[in-house]
Length: 295
Image 1 (cartoon, one colour):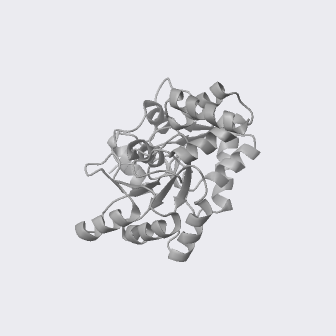
Image 2 (tube, one colour; image 1 turned 30 degrees about the vertical axis):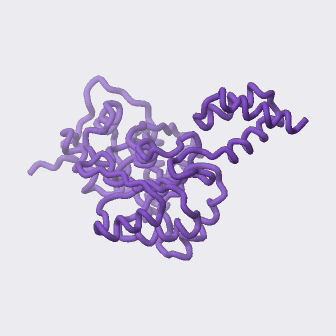
Image 3 (spheres, rainbow, N blue to C red; image 1 turned 30 degrees about the horizontal axis):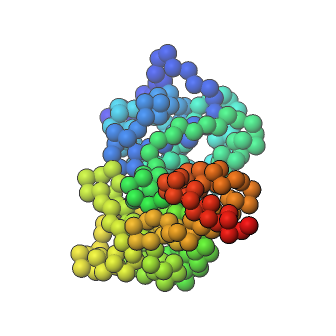
């Protein structure tokens, strides 16, 4: 069998600027890749990847031969120095993770920082993201959100992280493994109370599923239906949310009071309406009453 790495050739007529290209790859469905990403992968002098087996599967689906170099959490300074040397020679390098956007809970930020410090061109080739896809289909507020990465494996550390984020007025997004899901739901309930949680798993795959409810309800569901399988993203409602994810009147009033410190009634209603999705007419009346109370 002919060695694909030795047989590698760049596509004719395509010229890319030397630099590091952070290329998004599919998170499940192999067709979720952009044409630009394919162009970069075909023309790169080398593709840096977490696992050559995973990356070869993707490249094989699109008949792409490429030189591969492992770059993961265990890659040291020597590997980064080699990358910098190749960029100094004018090479085009692509950085991919096993799935989704590189650097999002994946290795790579040290490499990007080193490249930028040396003045090399670094750019993003955006695409599929489990974080944003889960947020989209969770049905929870998307105007403000925070990504926590993977939750800690131990309960005490997990509770500490959740407590640190408890007061943040934003939707929380975290990665979790199937074996730890039940324990994590229990800790979420203890640290954050009865906030709505969406368990989003197997995004873009055949058995994609979204289950929503408060932590106790979800724990009961998985107790009765068995442990889920596959990749899981947890999307947790902000504080002050009721069961259907709508911001309560008390929190709206607090938001309006804050806005009224520097805005007129009409402007405050508009700004809070854009943030929450609530009707501006209702917010105007509420803001007007708050303004009168203040006077």
